Length: 298
View 1 (cartoon, rainbow, N blue to C red):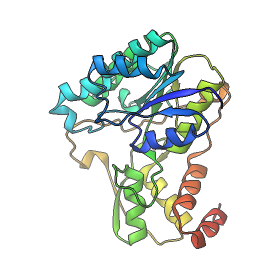
View 2: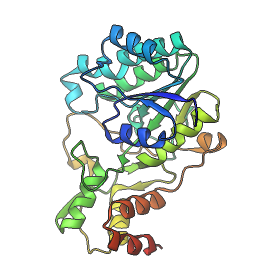
View 3: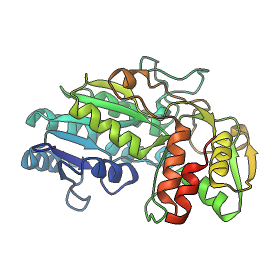
């Protein structure tokens, strides 16, 4: 991809690492946090002006959902106002902006997958900060906002923050009892597929705007854990729990499946979550195990 320069923030995180890998054939500028604090508008403007990228992909975020209730300034600073700075910097150099949002902007009262035209109804400080970030991002002349959820895809050796699915798989592999929600419905998102979709939208010059970017389909966390156990070939020790019986600082949507028809219409149909789960488990397995996992299909 000769000539494309991509500026990636949050490149050391789970999603950011996948985005950097996806653009291996482009020129990637990925400043570390110690050299660029995106909550500082002056630093953002200077860094983007110096790099003059064709695209800015913002993978940085304040993701402590419960902690945001006590730290709203930090949550809005990174999830909203930093995005405003990136949008302004993108406009100044004529770059495309890609920003990632969340399913948490919905209240979870739906009974069928949310489309991009569904009205947001955030129920927490974190969710409100992410919704504000969407608005700021879409102020840029050429911007994509991609809503993701339940991200997974770290390698077996990973020192950073892990998601819910990684925790479930670790418990299954270690033979521990795993508590899983039996009534929360999600559409998991494999970071490699999200990164590939991001690249497609930029390279294909798709119509800018809001897209849902998750693997297709929906399931409860219990069903996802059962599928992971089947692929791994283990006898799971699952403890189904109800979301009503778990006390959390911030409210979560009970139903947050997202529809991906708009992304498919833009030329990138997302694989099913089952296919993505199988590919991830095979990619993190030892070479002797990988072939067996790949073959362990329905």
